[in-house]
Length: 256
Length: 282
Image (cartoon, rainbow over all chains, first blue to last red; front, side, top):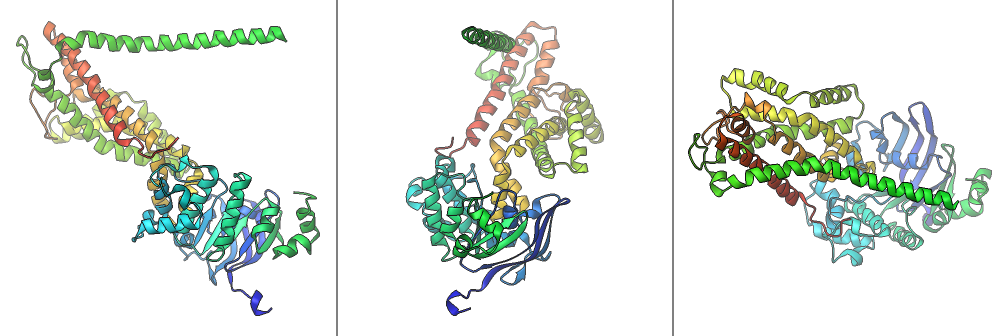
């Protein structure tokens, strides 16, 4: 591998399995996510892509009956180690959800500052809020109504607000679970632009149903099917020259 | 097809009309109670009625000032015990879902909510009055708190469960610990509804007489000591109403009107205080 393509891996999942009660929904996945790159996770509904994503910041801890096996290394440290504090981990691994979920009882400003305020982080919150809203390409639209309810924003704006909120705690990794699936095409395009800009600073893992979106935003693509990782590689290779038959069938629309 | 459309329209009109009629019938007792209290009570209302101490039979003037203060005082004591316990239990029930312990608590709360208030009064009598060897505002407050807790807990549980799980996840994903997520995000989101539930329970306990009869008892004078018998509007109304004296009957009506006003003002104040100040909220 030459120097131009060599990257340190931010996340490395080894032998990762997730069970809900008796059902195994993720089967011995091994996957590396390079630092400051975008990894798209694609696959048909129920293939385990969201389950994989949620394992990366230990959201499964809170689901009764869920069990995670195997190792996930974040900067070489196994986050599934019981000694790792899930709360501290989630500050390093932020998450944006499928549907915009701003806190309705807080103002736009307080939504962005929520992570800081709730975690009692001292400092200039106004500065952080402005920076994060600028990073999320929302500042110009909301700067005159920071005290308003987030519900006064459109769906696309709400989603960018949620991204700004996730950025405010300064995570290293950003997990996005179909962040544009509830949005119209224009709002989707803005989110995708944003992902391009954000990868300069963050490692991003994005789950998407939209193959064009995966092709547009990601450097690497992982294809999941029935809880297994079928194939992972450079996005271009996955879409133009997949090694596996099932990947080809899926990306060309033969099933899924 | 035309015939069936006509029929459906007719049924629609008929049922809409029936619903409107039912609303009127349901409102009738409410309006008549209000009307009766205002008609009989308004005449006796004056500034001194709100501020003065009661006078003996036959004497002109006098009021229920100490009972107004006493009611507010005892309700405040009840809130001090009842709100944290009731809301806290509700949050616990909502968060822990179907653990054995939670199911036990839920069952107990349901049972307690159905216990007649006079029984609750007897409990407060046994738990507070007997050991203290005196009737007291504290005993009254405890009795009312016991009435508040189960209904408030169940209402809070339902309201907290209505908060979408996505908000909880959003908060947890920001690295906010679970307990803080419960209190500062989930509970805060449910707060509007909880305030309404609190107001309803305050209005309910402020109108209770039976559990106060042998806990707070009554008092002809001002009292703000928790260990002393204390006058309340409801007990005062009760005493006036069962008396054989005409002028006391008039005072009972006026005091009833005062009670309605006090509860109404409490409602308005709390709504004003907790109204969302965010603009553009839908």
